[in-house]
Length: 178
Figure 1 (tube, rainbow, N blue to C red):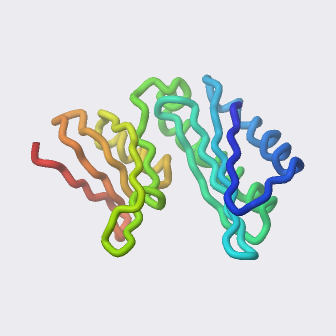
Figure 2 (cartoon, one colour):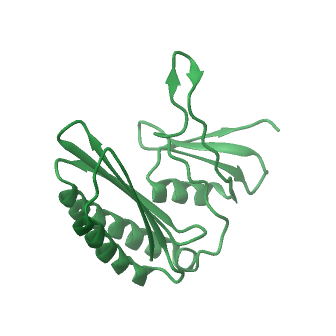
């Protein structure tokens, strides 16, 4: 597994780095292709630490989880079972599509990092690839990425759409006219 570790306001020691590498390499068994992992470590204030891990095994096989506690080692112990549950759930649900990663690359879109508003101006722009997929596949991808919305091109009518999770737990769909 290829592992990229980035830290912000946090000093990564070699023991934690080795532990992350060791524990994440156990996820290799779930993927037919060599997966890659992006690990983001950050400190919030003086006493909170956030760990975000995104596992990517190529097309259609991306899982992501974020945990914040008062100890980075605890974060690792909490986040790994979450990721494993997601992998097992979607591997079972998607079957060969997930293992073989045979469809289009999903739109990787993090609503927390896209556009931040400050006095009405755009301070950050994030670009991403957009997939041509069905609405059902978009729902699966949104759940897989643990996001509240997902941008895609509808396979049936080739319209750009935004799928979002409603407060009542159902889904909404925004379609463009053209």
